[in-house]
Image 1 (cartoon, rainbow, N blue to C red):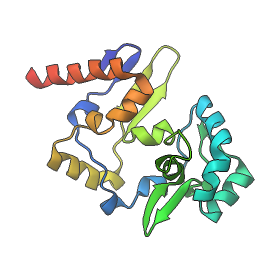
Image 2 (spheres, rainbow, N blue to C red):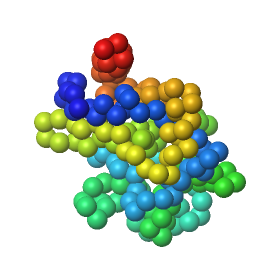
Image 3 (cartoon, rainbow, N blue to C red):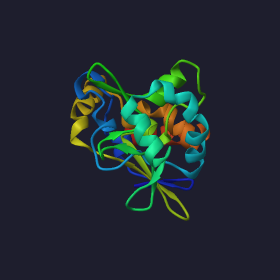
Image 4 (tube, helix red, strand yellow):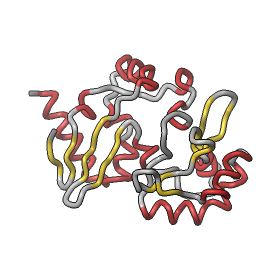
Length: 189
């Protein structure tokens, strides 16, 4: 672990390799698990605002879940998260054949909304836990991502480079440049 500004970072994000392999996992992270995607307070407001524009991209089951539970919920641990369909799929998930995709991201890709998706989804396999004085930035190892780890090793792409855009979105360009310098320094030592 090392500190960068107000973040405590696991060296795993510099040392482990990862590239999503949708053809192998079929977007399992959007349909497996026991909770929705973590959200910030600001993101709950964004979801409320963009829902009417995203709704046409969603499945009827997702729309029903959102209209019954809301565009976001408080999870069992009190954290803010996306609602689920029958305690499984994220309510915002859509399918291209058997591959799970994000309906919000599809609306973004078509220029309908300017928000890509929750930053927690964009950052995955990095998970950020905010504390009073700092944020913990960790690598989340999940067996459904074994193919992504293999592809990352094959392509030699460290986790932090795979999620560069999301890390910049979360912490800013200057923070990311400092992280990259730390990674380069570690490689040389």
